[in-house]
Length: 118
Image (cartoon, rainbow, N blue to C red; front, side, top):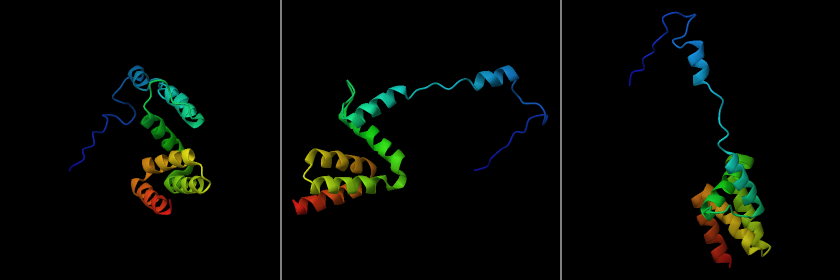
C-alpha cells in the first residue's frame, strides 16, 4: 500500500485559515461524566438505575485494569481465591466476574480450581 504525502504549498502557511483551524480544534466535551458516576456506584455496589449488571461489571473491570495494568486479571484472580478461602461467596463472585471480563481463560482456570476444591 502506498502512502502519499501532500505537502502544503508553502512551509510557512497552512491550508486552513487560523479561524478554521481554531474551529476544528474546539473545546473537547466531557463525555465520561456519566461513566464516572456509574463507576462510583459500581465500587459502592449500587447499580445505576436502568444499567445492566454486565455494564456495571465492565466498568468495574476497566477501573481495575486502570489501577493494575496488565497484571489486573492476575490480581482479580488472587482476590477471588482469597475471598473463596475466607468463605465470602459474594465477594468471590465479584472478583471472578472481573477476572472473566479481563481474561476468560484465567477465569475458566479459576472455575476449574474452585470446582475441584469445593
